[in-house]
Length: 76
Image (tube, rainbow, N blue to C red):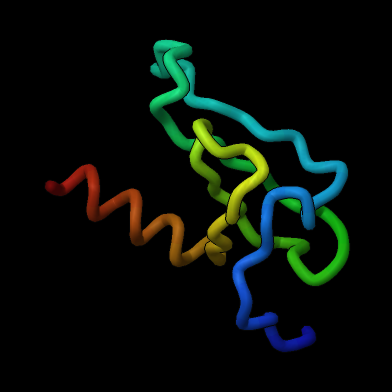
């Protein structure tokens, strides 16, 4: 596996991904969206972006990091 690039990509650097919102979202653009890039440098990672700024930066998480992050949220 090639090393991860250290810069945070903008969402437009992730062509062909399907961004998803939680079913709990109210549609008021106050949530995050997630996508799973399937090709290129970002394959296998989870991309997360702010729904208010879809062309802005996307944070990238490994599957394990995302699981740890969301588990921490659930624990409070």
